[in-house]
Structures are given as structure tokens and as C-alpha cells.
Image 1 (spheres, rainbow, N blue to C red):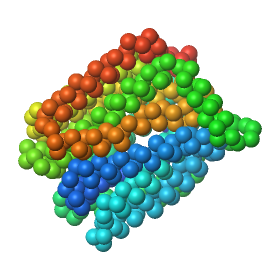
Image 2 (image 1 turned 45 degrees about the horizontal axis):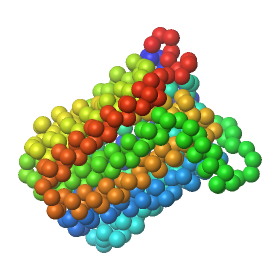
Image 3 (image 1 turned 120 degrees about the vertical axis):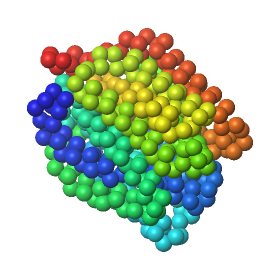
Image 4 (image 1 turned 90 degrees about the horizontal axis):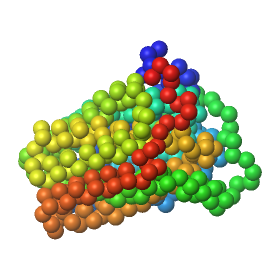
Length: 410
């Protein structure tokens, strides 16, 4: 088996990879479809910001508990149960859209349900992956998952843009439900020993243990603090302002926005192919430089939002972001004890996500009251400054790879 696909030699990872690939493929259109479904109900950016904020707030409220549960219970089972909840919430969205009874309050409520479910899924996945493969294959495993995610991101938004413009967004939700139904029995094929967590369950004691592990690593909380602001800018400027400009500026348009998001996915895709073969010896140093590139598409979106130029900028940002994404996952999985990884990941997610609802609400309000170009260019500069400032912390700059993590032939 080629070096880049070596992780597929591990049986449990193969089953997990298949299940994850199915959910990524079938869910690839849903975010674009949801955004324009909300704008079809009420063509105002504040309405979209409410729905996105509801998802994130629910995620924030439950993510610490999700980390504790994932360290205590079989992680594949946790994911399966959450997929059932997702099927119910996403299926309800589809029914409301088909019947023409969808409303902003209903979309807000269902987004909150989906956000709460995700709060359990993400820590469970983060803690599960290192147990599915060997340390030498860990970067390849993460890059392979990113490869699938980016591959479907290329085609999904384009298809979603066409689908929304022709038959409406409800069918994208139906496709996602089908994917989740298929993934549940496949995850049942992942066979692992029970979690190593021992002793009587205590929510506060488990949270305290996770916090101690989190706070003892300066590289960890430094990056999380940086992403606290960066994610708020990203979700507001790109997630709220982007679709709004696409819908109301003929230079971009809904289909054009789909192409831009797909170009970002193409950048991720090509970078994953590189990362499947070549190790990141300084994952955080290179990763934060890569994140700073996102300032380019933010600036272009504000100054001159034409499809070709914005797609090129998004491509570069996607490649840079993938360096960080894979590097961050590898750094976490190599340096955090496996029996505490889900809890530490939940603190990472809490800190990274906690300001995102504020970002969606601020940008939803700001874009109707200020010059979009000024807002977006200022946001891009701030984003780059924060990303590069993290490199001043020695533990971020010097972070290398764990012993034995890089295969000899690399």
C-alpha cells in the first residue's frame, strides 16, 4: 500500500473512514442549502445570523459535557446516537421546507438541536482517531479525512447552488439524512476495547482533569485564544456577509458563491495530497502562517467580489488552512493522553467556538449599517495579525513531532 494510504491498512480506521466519507459526501451541500433556505424565508442577514448563532450556542453549552461522555463511553456509540438525533432534526427541516411551513424560529430551534448533537460528535471523533491507527500513520489518517472533506466541498457547493436555484434546498437535507442512516451500521463495525476511564463518574472531577491537561500546555491555550477571535471573524465575515453579498451583488451571485467555496475546497484537497506523503515537522508554526492567508479572500470579498479573483484567493486560503487543520489534529493527538483527549478537545472547541455567536450577530448587524468593503478589509487585517502573533509564543514556534511519529521512510 502506498505511503499516503498506509492508514487504510488498519481495519478499524477503514470502517471509520468509510462511515465518515459517506457523511461528508451526503452532508456537503447542506450548509450552502441551509444558508439560502433561511434567506428565502427572510432575505435579511440578521435572520441568517440568528440560525448560525443558535447552532453555535447549543454547541458551546454542551461541548464540555460531550467531552466527558466521549472519554467515558464507547466513542463510536456516542457518534451513532448523535447521528440518530441529527436524522430527526435535519429530516424535520426538510419536511418544513417541502411543505412551505418553515419559519425563522423553527429553523433556529432545529439548528440548536443539531448544534447540541455536534457537541458530542466532534470530541468523540477527536478521541477516537488515534485509537484506530498507529502513531506513524496518524498524519496520513488525518490528511485522508481532510481529503474526503475537501473533495466533496469542491462539488457539493456547486451542486447545492444549482439545486437551490432550481428545485429548492430541501432535497439537500434529504440526501444528508440518507447518508447518516447509512453511516450508523458501518460505525458498528469499529471494534475497540472499552474506554480506559475508571472510577465513579463525576462530571466536575472529569472536567477539572480535562482543564488541568488543557491549561498545562501554553501552545494549546495560546492557539485556542487566537481562534476565539479568528473564528468569530470567519463565521461572521465569510459565513454571514459572504452569502448576503452573493445574493445581492450580481458580480458574484449564488452560483458564483458556490464556485468560490468549491475553490477553497480544491485548495484543501491539493494540500491534503501533499500532507499524505510529507510530514509536518513544525505543525503549529506552518499552520498559523497558513491560517493568515485567509486575510486575502476576506479582502477580495470586500474590495472586488468577482468570481474568478475571489476563487483564486479562496483556493490559497483553503491550502493554508489545511496545513493548520492537519497539524493541529496531529499535535493534539500526539501530545494529549488518549484517555483525556476528548475532554481536552472539548475545552479546545469551547474556547474556539464561544465567541462565534457574537461574530454572527455582530456581522449580521454591522453589514447593514457600515460599508462592506471597510468591514471586510479591516477584518482581514485583524485576522492575519492575530494568526501571526501566536508565533511569538515559544512553545508554538518550537512545537515538533512526537518520537516515532514520523516513519523512517519519510
